[in-house]
Length: 149
Image (spheres, rainbow, N blue to C red):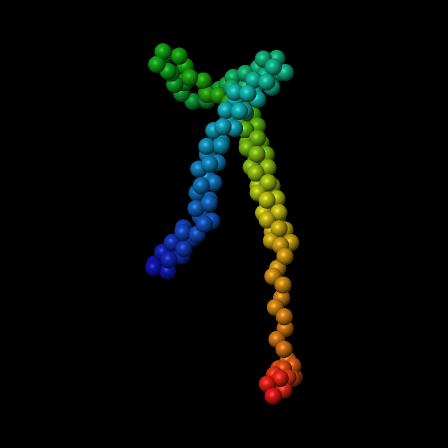
């Protein structure tokens, strides 16, 4: 059990787990924005070209096979509906979100590549001159001894 706990804590403390958590929170907030974009801006424009159809009103009323339909507070029967217009809006919302996430990931990958290229292109320190060979060291010592005499 202790080994499992250690593995979990190592995973949770790593940057990847934290980045995933932050990404999830930002994704949820961004999802709200794309839903509003779809429902409040895109679908009304699409509706203009389709004769003023409100996609949230597109549905198929399904028949009741057993029992009576439930009623609301006013005593009106509640219809069992298949809301395919809302589904179309959700699909469009998904595609918008997928395109934006794709663009963000593509941009981040491009920035990462540029960073790696700059690191690769950065001039490395010039190599240190090679150490003198034993022969050169001996000759230098002889020279210094002859100078001293």
